[in-house]
Length: 330
Ligand SMILES: NC(=O)c1ccc[n+]([C@@H]2O[C@H](COP(=O)([O-])OP(=O)(O)OC[C@H]3O[C@@H](n4cnc5c(N)ncnc54)[C@H](OP(=O)(O)O)[C@@H]3O)[C@@H](O)[C@H]2O)c1
Image (tube, rainbow, N blue to C red):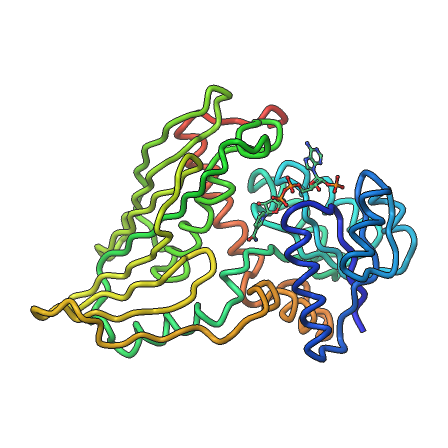
């Protein structure tokens, strides 16, 4: 039985708590909700009661020192992931850390190397990498559903600019690390990493971080990915892979629900639509992957190996460099 502990009791922590509760209620006996730590002990206590954690702490370190946890879920702003990962490694705990994994690639290099030396699981909670939809998309493309894929588009925008976490440079604010990361991961999963060059265009908040952006990836073999991410309005969240014989529409690249194939020979009717398997929330897949990795003594999950986390951070570093965005602690 893997005893799960949470660092942070905010928005996404609630979703993860519901998910793990759902896994337990569905009969999973390999995981339990052991402890939650929040900066405010009263809030930690309420959170523990709501979701059925055994213990609540008003200090992250006290929870780790307490010894009742094996796998820590880090659910704090990106700016704090590096510090919180280091804290977990100090106490020899396995870690599932929210995206963006760290503020930049050099921070990630340090903690990933440390986890590998210690033989501890450290993985990024970029949920789309762990979902069955990933394999379903690959299979459809391999089967030739759209012929040879040549171009893809993906977008992800939400009206989230009112949140301090999104605009504050000290919290690694900006669209890129919060939502743009999903568009880059989508392109990476579908078209791979043989990128010749990246073009981009950005608009800023008055605080200096990115409000929205468009990114175009040019692949060495002639394919192209056109990505858009933003924080000041909604988008349809579609990912579309265009090929010589048709196109495949992925509904919601942030939590794919269905794949629809069009082979546009004078008809706009889809030729096939498939839905993803029923899920609790979609976060269960990354937790299940952590359970397998810990049981097998691995330091990384095959769905998001350390080299992939680093590659995505290097892409985001280079975009931020082009845009002149540095966080205050960099
Ligand atoms: N995978 C996904 O689908 C998904 C969705 C949403 C967010 N996320 C990721 O999850 C992380 C947290 O996002 P969220 O929306 O849950 O954030 P949030 O609710 O604003 O904050 C989460 C927790 O972080 C701590 N925190 C907040 N502001 C802080 C500050 N100024 N200084 C220090 N600690 C602070 C608090 O911990 P305490 O409870 O201890 O006070 C808070 O409860 C982000 O990295 C985000 O990218 C992922």
